[in-house]
Image (cartoon, rainbow, N blue to C red; front, side, top):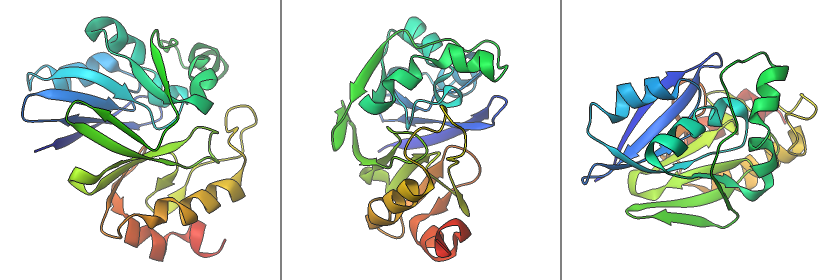
Length: 214
């Protein structure tokens, strides 16, 4: 039985998720800023042992705490191959965006497959470029849930308007990926986004204004 917990951290109010099993092993999804806060709030009190981190994409707000966990728990950060370069420039973008304290991850494992299985945790990978080239949604079938990062939010979708930072192909590419790939998931799948409140695939298919009129 898997459990999902969320904490919202940092200047961009990024949702970091901790998925744990009955053995108290866990995976962090999008380890953003304030990694010590994530650790002290969700991991240490529950007696959890992190075994890996998964990033929905390579933006600094979603991986800003990875180095802390790389070093404390000796675990890697999995990033889609098309976003590894972006992830390796987290420190650069932190300086550009005046976000002190973010450094590049020290251990990255690229992924470029349809699925990832780490011990008891099995994710289907839905590649949804547009916001970034390697943007992905992580489908956890065992919990009828999908972690969408900055691809899909409640009643909106990810940005594509910042040159160099949003380098995934643009608005049309993102909309197409959502409609032709992400929306193939069952309608009752819970959507856990990178920012804001959770929703469902059906709700966004029927009510998301960024998609209804595009």
